[in-house]
Image (tube, rainbow, N blue to C red; front, side, top):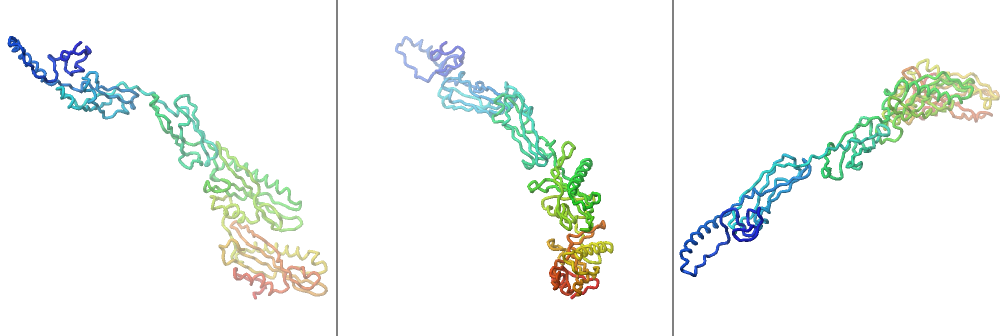
Length: 543
């Protein structure tokens, strides 16, 4: 069809002429204002009058501004998925005069993360100067539209098909995960895991948080992730046993049998002259690391048995030997405890060389006390009494029964020496007599490096050689004497003095002992008074 104002061709459905801007649905037309030309012929006056009337009407109509409500031309299209949808907002310029197109634009409140049912406010902005040139009045400020038509995303649980498997030993376990689901969008590389504690030290009961962090926005593919993180509890790790009390009775009974077998296998190699009392369970020591960073085994169990050793030929007195058998890596798995046996610990060479300990307090010191900086230590079943030393600080604290045993063992050592044919083959000696003794106790009991106490029992024997006689003093020295609450006692060492008396007989230059009591006191006691307090008892004198 043709515009009734400018005559140009326009589409049938158009309301406004895209060339002159006139509303073709209103009567009349409009154009820019022109001056009315004068008529040439007078006889057209009547017609002119009528024309003037018509022209006035036309001018009146042309001078009326055309009003356009822009709110009617605002459009909004929505796309994407519900809750993360987006909108496209615009003016339908095809319905407006062409010359107005670039002077009008719209801005919404927001255009992303839209959900069906949201109400959007769209503000209209335009330039009035161009419209006024064509006597057009533009109206409209804001349009409210409701979001609709967004697709519903498909919900996906990324942890469907995810598994986390702990491995190793508690509390030093680790964990690995895998994704074996069949969803094409989910990738194993998008899972990340974080430990609640040290990443290399998991224990049963710890919590591991797994986070799903997709490399691309899942909504772009039409998916809605239902869960981005999930907590997993660590369980099923073989666990280091933390306390002796956690060890099942069945495990202890079995390992006690193993301990006895271990000791029997070792002592089977003793001399045929060595006698042993039946092994007696003496208790345990249990150690657990204080810190994961500490060196050494994580946990250690010592099952300790003792036996009294004797020698058929009397080469040494009866003596108790403590045999600690070591077990490491005590692990609990499904209620069952396993351990690795390491054999008998310690070594003593007092009278007879053997594995084990003569002094139980020394066993506790070396096996437990020396490692207390790195380990929690516990002892029990009787061995706990050896956690502290029970040194004697006065000779009067030694009971008569214990003193008698000490004297018997000392005189046996003296007799063994006097009866050695190599030294006394051409001499005669009287039966040794106990003259008394010296008691030395350290002034600094906190000093672990020095001997705590010494009991020196002095025996005398008259030696006759080539009709010349001398009294020979033979001191037997006990070191670090302890008496325990259960009545047992121990000492670290016992020995005959190594001093050579130096008398001029065929055997004298090789004879141990003293022939001068004053010199004996000076060597054994007086030289030690800077570090020790003394007691002298019996018929001996202090000089």
